[in-house]
Amino acid sequence: MKNSIPILIFSLVIISLSTNFFILSQEIENEHKKVKNFEEYDEFDDPSLLKKKKEKKVKKKKKEEPEEIEKEEKDDETPKEEKKTEKKEQNNNDDELYPSIEELRQDELGEINKYKLFLMKYYYELIMLSILLIFIINAIIGVKENRKIAEKWFNKNKDFFIENYSHLGGEREYNPNNLSLIKDSYNVYKFFASGRVYVTWMIVELNFKKRQDLISLLSQLFLFWEKDRVMYEVSLSPSEDVPCIFAICKKKDIKLNKKNYRELNEFAEISNPSFIDKNYVILTEDEDTTNKIFTYNNQFLSQYRKVEKFIELIFFTDRRSCKDKHGLVVSFELKNGYTEGDFYDMTLFTHMLVDVLGSTSVKASYRKEANGRRKEYEAKISRELAEKNREEIQNAKEEKKNAERNKATTREQLKKLEEKEKKEALKERRKRFKMLKV
Image (cartoon, rainbow, N blue to C red; front, side):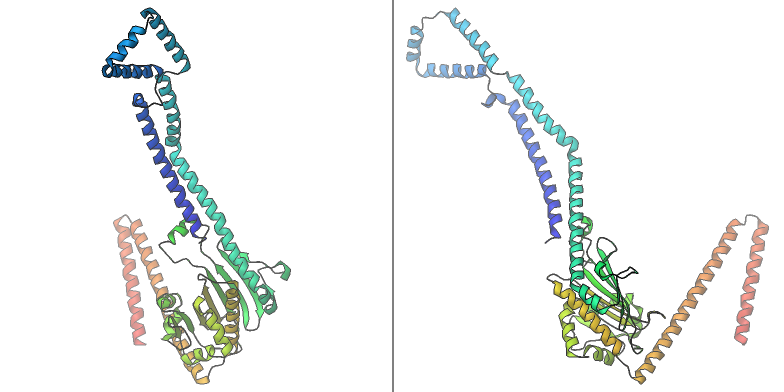
């Protein structure tokens, strides 16, 4: 609901501006019509016109009742000259009291033209100002909402991290009273922790929707790639080397995760154990080890089921780098209806998984097989790298040749280049021949 407020404001402002402009234009047209046909309306009647109307009525009455009108005319003993003077005086008085029709018309047109000119001149500017105001209001609301969600997560998990870790935050001088989230951007917050059993370091990334950006909010009505995420990235130091690669993800995200993490494409296969939901899949190198990890105890399984609806990806690998060999990524998607208690459950589940992975052991037979697969994979990678290097070197040589050819202008220079190319080709053939003999 909060995301739709700026969109509603934006649409309402545009509708109101367009309707107001339409209504005002209609009113202006109506007023012009009134001014043109002023004789038909009583609002713009002049006293002289009222007299004419009265005379017309009198004539009608004369036709209808001629006898009564003749009697009234006989009774009038006033001379014609006195009547004329009276009429002139009345007209002069009426002109002083009431403005003329031309004056009324000019005043009315002046007022109408003022509004019309103002709207016609600054109509587009008003629309742009309203859009700018909506952008500013939306940015303030979006930044505040993202900050509120981040603060809720931090306040719920602060005590847990203080109890379990020796160092928190990005500062060298650790002060538990001065802990806070690292603001990477308006919609990304980070938290750093280190110094725990089986954990070298942990980075928690709170990646929210771009609520401060109105364009991204409007695009979310049609495109749904932006989501609120809480991601835990851990560098593990287990008690024993665990040569295992596995991932838990939704069925629709299998291709995407295989593309992002090459290890899954090379080592892992799909399995559907009974302890996970139907919408989820495990990509694992060995089913026995994953079953052993997730059925470690009932407490861990119950905690997994609490958090399962929020899981976007759980990825574990033993092939990260020489320094940080074992790595774990746990990504949660914040769906509608989540609470602060869910934030704590996510943190608790990740640390329970870390403890299980840190204390697992593997059979010697499986270890040999896994190490053999890794050697083959390393040889494959080294071949690919060598081929890439060759291609790069060859491309560089060709570029140099093309540059020299472009520089060469005379026939002698071109002949020299051709001779050099022939000599280089002969050298390469001799090298290949010697290698074949060997």
